[in-house]
Amino acid sequence: MFSKYKIREIPKSSADYPKEWRALSDAPETAYAVGDLSLLRQTKLVVVGSRRTPAPALKLGQTIAKDLSYSLVVTTGTADGGDSAAIDGALSGSGKVICVLAGGFSSVSQALQPLLEKVSEKGLILSPYPYETPVRNFSYEYRNKLLAALGVGTLVLGAAEKSGALITARYAWGQKKPVFALPYFPGSAAGEGCNAIIKAGGVLTETAFDIANKLGITLEEEKIAPVSLTTDELKVMTALRNLSEGHIMDIAAVSGLPTFKAKSVLSALEVKGVVVALGGNRYKPIKEGGKL
Image (cartoon, rainbow, N blue to C red):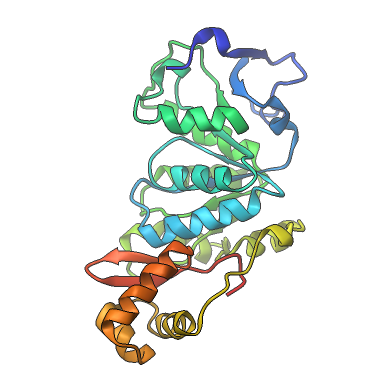
């Protein structure tokens, strides 16, 4: 657990207090923090997603968070799924990430401790509550409101019809901030909320560049390296794009490669981060920084 003696108390009167929270009528009187407070003075983007966000969306979310982290501070919660993907992506990039807790620091679970230890080394962990405060039912919605306030916009990686990620999106809209969402196949329960966001005027997002263009931010493109593919890898990627997603047998047939060869190539593409395995010998392509 995080020691209470390492936690900084930041009263609203302090210059280190998050300026975005000051405008809220129910802003916490004191913020509690571990890590790099200078991140609060930088431009932030909220990235959230439900615990049931599908694997391809998590992989894409990681890539987007990584690419954005060189120009923005990725800001998120601490749940499994979309939040964890945002954290992992930011840590694999610049390391600029802020996590907002739904309770005091004593509420951090043992399972989450290793990941948040990494965040505290490069980024910042923030709580609106004193150390011993437990997580309560209303805590999550309040945390989501605070999250939305911190960012210049919010990206939703995955959300069913009823999801905490949608609450964050609604608060962002209420604060006149843009909302971004990954697109899902029609009828996908895990992405129903994302498709609803897009239909309501949210920005359909497939790469970090979609967000940067909307916000008028220039990404550090030299740090978003294009992926180098072999001839066989290009054949498999072309087949996967044509199929959208497919079984190993279909991918082999469309690419013109023997099944054993296609399987080997797919494994290499997974390592390169441009393909994700869905289970049952099915695969899906992932866009990498808009470069493929």
